[in-house]
Length: 240
Ligand SMILES: Nc1nc2c(ncn2[C@@H]2O[C@H](COP(=O)(O)OP(=O)(O)OP(=O)(O)O)[C@@H](O)[C@H]2O)c(=O)[nH]1
Ligand SMILES: C=C(OP(=O)(O)O)C(=O)O
Image (cartoon, rainbow, N blue to C red; front, side, top):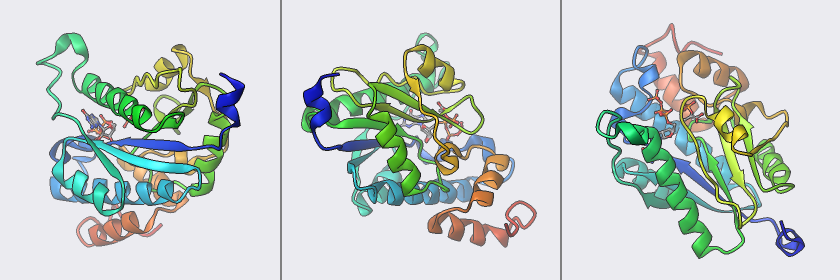
């Protein structure tokens, strides 16, 4: 990484991918019906976007999605939208990894698009389901990421990826999201970032993850969504 590159003021553009809402958060389908899952996905996205948009070094946020409702929410809070085509099923594209291929292809294309338009900007792919994220921890992670080219924040399970950073314009983001992605990101050369960032690491895919996030404290949109759900699912969404 060149000295010139590092001497410029930190500027990061955050990419957040969200698939079609009707297919989102299937691991919560035993707990919530489709409408409730959709509401929760949008609420967690809203909280995640609010936090990252407030971080001083974040100069842009782009939501990568094929879903019109997600795109509307993104635009309403000042984020950009990068439209990716609706994913095809793994059965239709067995050689390309199905939806994982779609997700990573869409993130790669969005990262290249951002870098073409904002020269020298750092690029981050961040999970959309981080309702306990705090601005301070994301700011710290960004600062740590800037000490090297490509880096990763492993999720609270130790297997997934909460955030992937490329802080050198010469180094592609090269996203390898999907089950077990932490190992793939590390094996492909991403440096692990070691801070104590529980909110950043707590992405919500299962009911246990949701409990973990609630124990940390969730953002206002997610709180409101869960409070509304308490009336229909008290055993799952009881008080913290
Ligand atoms: N734009 C886009 N986002 C995707 C795609 N596939 C997955 N995502 C998003 O990437 C993140 C991780 O995806 P998954 O873990 O597969 O999906 P999920 O909805 O979080 O949870 P499950 O349905 O339980 O697997 C989520 O924010 C998804 O919405 C895709 O093809 N395109
Ligand atoms: C897609 C991923 O996350 P999750 O399955 O936890 O949503 C990932 O960690 O790469």
